[in-house]
Image 1 (cartoon, rainbow, N blue to C red):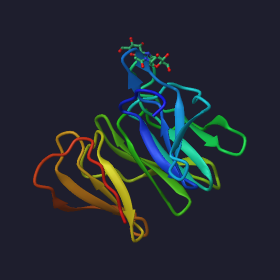
Image 2 (tube, helix red, strand yellow; image 1 turned 180 degrees about the vertical axis):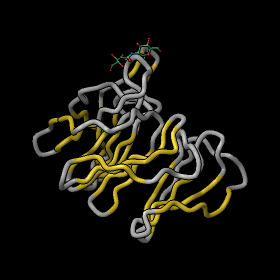
Image 3 (cartoon, protein in one colour; image 1 turned 90 degrees about the vertical axis):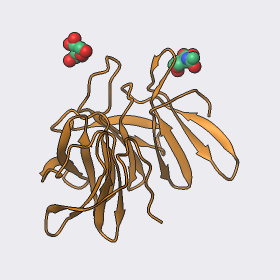
Length: 194
Ligand SMILES: *[C@@H]1O[C@H](CO)[C@@H](O)[C@H](O)[C@H]1NC(C)=O
Ligand SMILES: *[C@@H]1O[C@H](CO)[C@@H](O)[C@H](O)[C@H]1NC(C)=O
């Protein structure tokens, strides 16, 4: 990568891998970069408006969205912003209702779900049409740096600090349900649906 970073967030958009924020030996980062697997090359993109670590990054409708995280004072933030690769700009969207660090996020049915965070079981979603945040029922457990993915129209969440449970959200039923337990607690696991 172009820069040393840990606790950054990453996602895929239009064939490129994007990495945003994180921190290094000197502090928190607003810098971002993209990786082109065909050219095997990293390029810098414009910095986010805010330094973020322990945040979430998702792509939806051709844009990147960076949500929450620790700001440069290690406080959880509710700010969120999007990046448009066509003009290379980051712009704020309305803030989340709750400050969240160590959240996880997924996109389902034109909505971005911001899930959990430090000490949080609460969930909210951002509607890409109305550009508003809407409450979603809370999960059964607090999840600090759990992971989530979408499979067949359901949102699955895994672990988090001190958590070994797996639960899923059914959008039509508007309900979370615990599914199973992993064999141990998993903090910052990586999950992927293929
Ligand atoms: C950390 O990031 C800052 C901002 O990009 C940079 O100026 C600094 O050199 C980096 N430090 C290390 C140790 O990489
Ligand atoms: C950030 O957190 C520190 C304590 O860690 C606190 O003193 C400070 O007021 C907070 N800043 C904001 C903007 O809330």
